[in-house]
Image 1 (cartoon, rainbow, N blue to C red):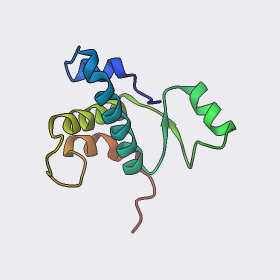
Image 2: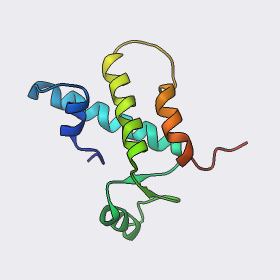
Image 3: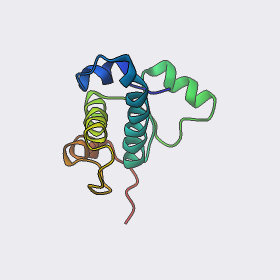
Image 4: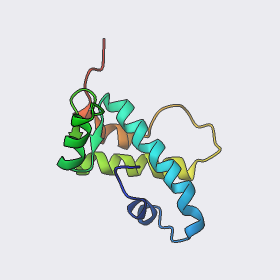
Length: 110
């Protein structure tokens, strides 16, 4: 299950076809995963979801509740994945998404 709901993702992509919902769900999960990998931390929809993850030892290190910037970054990544499906345009997330995520990034290494 994704943090951002599929309806929000569909609106962002300006799609209303139920057929697209499955593929958008997959890209949304991938976009959230890419953002979490970039941040080196997990994010959650709200305090209840965060508390539940902590209780079940699934929160990881320094988890946070999703911010508007993180949500926007995930939607930018989603849009990029949807528009460029099948293309080999590189291996990094889009620049504007990186810019939105950088303030929340931890443990970047050397």
